[in-house]
Amino acid sequence: MLVLLPPSEGKASSGRGAPLKLESLSLPGLTDARAAVLGELVELCGGDEDKARDVLGLSEGLRGEVAKNAELRTAGARPAGEIYTGVLYDALDLASLDAAAKRRAGRSLLVFSGLWGAVGVNDRIPSYRCSMGVKLPGLGALGAHWRAAMADVLPEAAGGGLVLDLRSSAYAAAWKPKGEVAGRTASVRVLHAPTRKVVSHFNKATKGRIVRSLLSAGAAPKGPAELVEALRDLGYEVEATEPAKAGVAWSLDVLVEEIH
Image (tube, rainbow, N blue to C red; front, top):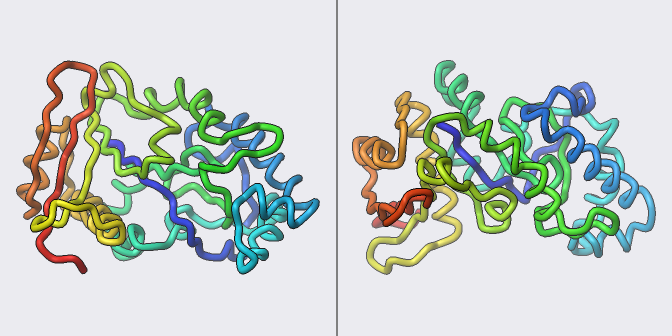
């Protein structure tokens, strides 16, 4: 099972670990694409601060993020699972998983990123600010940059098993499973059962809980149909839409009564 996650806007501080080593990150086929984004981002943020803020879409209150980006090559690095914070990651709470579940997380979770493309939760990265919606002056739109780079790398990472896609739309645009891989991909929405509406904050929290539940239970669904059964066994109310033809991802709705 491969689980695709969005990053979080908020991030923990880099800490005092050894600096980033691009070649040590998962998905080495993305190294050149990562180096290109990193190089331009560091150069941009080491120059005109106002221009950098404008390109990155940062408010005056986030001016300090520009200086942080300028130091990415020398800043301390920590596991990505510690860097990413926010609602989904609070609910997932990787640090409190037992040892077996942590090993499963290391094998199965990929966090998508405007800067790194995608990283494993054990990959050591510095804290940064660069969303997938950014257009860098030289490279252009990061979504398009990563689509080209990921076209070969992500199908191999998906292997022959289930792909559970929990990404937001901006990050989903960076890689869309196709063909046979799409047929074993399931995307998930979380809906407030009485209203059938998506509630953003609760949507993220429930997705974090879903991943935690699967990791803790040692669930290993081989495809979308098996995922539906696994989630129901774990106590989730799930409605599934099986595609009418091959090569199309499944859509799952997880229904919740309470918003908390």
